[in-house]
Length: 251
Image (cartoon, rainbow, N blue to C red; front, top):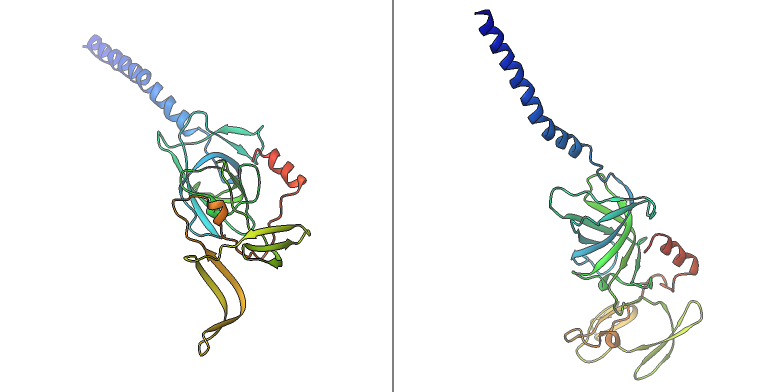
């Protein structure tokens, strides 16, 4: 009887040992997964994000919804420094979705770092974003966004009208330079005017602003018919110092 009990105990011990060996790999994988570095809240540079949904407004504040593709080569840069790169964090095989928050302080630029407008950012475009990731890892408050698609981007210019002709007008900017603006006021164009409306005489005086949206057919020759919108501040070309700042972050 004692030998039988010993055999049972020995077999139970072997069974326990085999069970530990079988469970060890799965436990190691679980531990490795739990110890994987997750993207914590902080200041990062995100490259090659694809716009899923265009901006919710034509001017800041606005939101752009983007996708970060689940790619093994995907990296993010902590504090925007290329020597602080580490792999992107994904949930399984899923892509990451982010909401990019843009406000009046966000620098918006084209592929050559020229000033751009939100209307130039459309679904399918690839962009780089430098900004603050929230604690929920879903929202990025952008300091800089740059469109990586080569296109004729629109710019917002502010100045004083020097001369008016039948084809347009000459605008003098704050730095003294002059720009000729082809008139967008043509038959069929949509315009919103803000001013004092005299209902009796059907006149508008003391005009504060005029927003013109010309009719564009199939996106053809949009550069010639692009609307000019008065802006509260001038969007002059960035200084060499600012361009060097963007180059440091690879933007």
